Image (cartoon, rainbow, N blue to C red; front, side, top):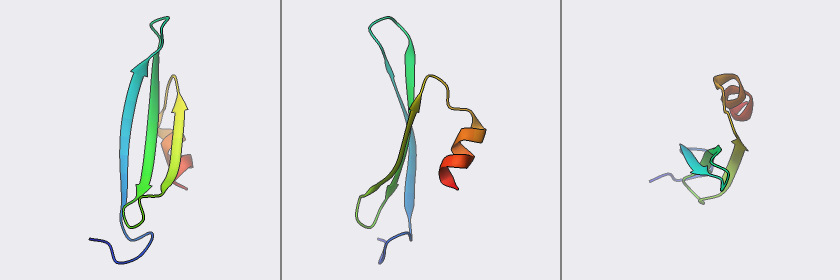
Length: 56
């Protein structure tokens, strides 16, 4: 269990599909101490350069 903010983060990818069949991807970063959503990126494509920019 984290004892303070920014000690442990959880990252996860999610995806969903729009009614027209296109796939949407989400990248989520959450602080495990206070469950605050630090970052939620969404797009049709999430390349690694975008993940690096989000984490910076």
